[in-house]
Length: 443
Ligand SMILES: Cc1cc2nc3c(=O)[nH]c(=O)nc-3n(C[C@H](O)[C@H](O)[C@H](O)COP(=O)(O)OP(=O)(O)OC[C@H]3O[C@@H](n4cnc5c(N)ncnc54)[C@H](O)[C@@H]3O)c2cc1C
Image 1 (tube, helix red, strand yellow):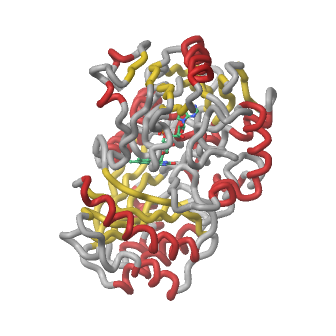
Image 2: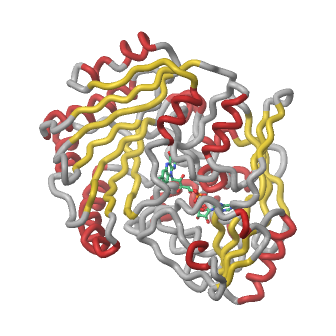
Image 3: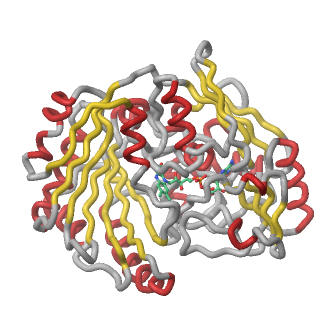
């Protein structure tokens, strides 16, 4: 976000236009009609009014990290909320209030200065509204739940310019929808208030790797990852990854933040060490650990990615099938990967119908991705991805709306399962004429 854009509207003939229209996934190149950098609710309502009269569709953007670039669109008007980035803590009330444009980095730094962790995501430039509206998985999910589980209330300007406050006390259906119903569907969220987690200083940062492993070892890694999630140790929410790059045909990596000391972390994660993985177990503050995680993210990438849910541990044969998805990589790919994100514990304490995030009882998210650097490599990578994602769909159930992919054809069922009808009803009230519209919006 360029601070100089705050309060202005960028059009196609503006010198800032080419930079302003970019999103994190640089393989997505859209040409919006206008981008309004709103700074408050009044600006937002005015931009909605202008879009209603332009006859174009409207998109909302905060951090621009939607995998499919749903926050921008060719010929669409875009409301960008990244300038609404104030954040304040009320320790007495035990709450944090954030503008929709607050980044994960600012959130963690602000809370870390007071000694609080927070169940937000891993990428420093993802912004809280996009993350929370889709659920929000992070390295504290098993301990404190999804990001949306800490949400106490949100303010939203709907597609007709009306202001709503959503909480357990006011407009409960909208509050239900804003916790996992996906961004860009109901209006523009302009403020979010969260419950603070308990203050906590020291954690153990864990990062384990293994190089050039056999297919069998990679399959065993998946099985141990899932078995480990079934243990009752809620103090760790790992990410595990199997990857294939031009330099390394099959590598493993596993990392996270253990809410406990080094000795406990080593004992709990012994199944991974005994698999031959080695690396770091180091005690530090939560903020220091998060800074290490954040340092791994570039400012932008070229990629396709899609995330599914698994409910049961995979059989040996299924795990081998998943490993086989990475036997070869696409021309121009710099890395293909299968990533596993731990769920369970606090995530599954809520019922599937308590919030719009339906897949409460899943064991983990499992995502397939391929990244490239030269724009010309896009077709080969999409062609590589498509059949493999379909194969993954056969072994899994439902898709994570924050890891969307156009390959999810029956997307309402995939993202929302048994909550789809309720979300359609909320959408019909707040966005009746589909002013807010994108390829996988609620319909
Ligand atoms: C590198 C990377 C790492 C990631 N890591 C994680 C992770 O650890 N955990 C996780 O859960 N997800 C993660 N994600 C996915 C990310 O959470 C989602 O893409 C999220 O929706 C991004 O939010 P954003 O505001 O940055 O993106 P945007 O593209 O701006 O927004 C995403 C969606 O939300 C809508 N939206 C945004 N702001 C508002 C608003 N104020 N009001 C209404 N609608 C809005 C947009 O219209 C769009 O549909 C990651 C994504 C990337 C690219």
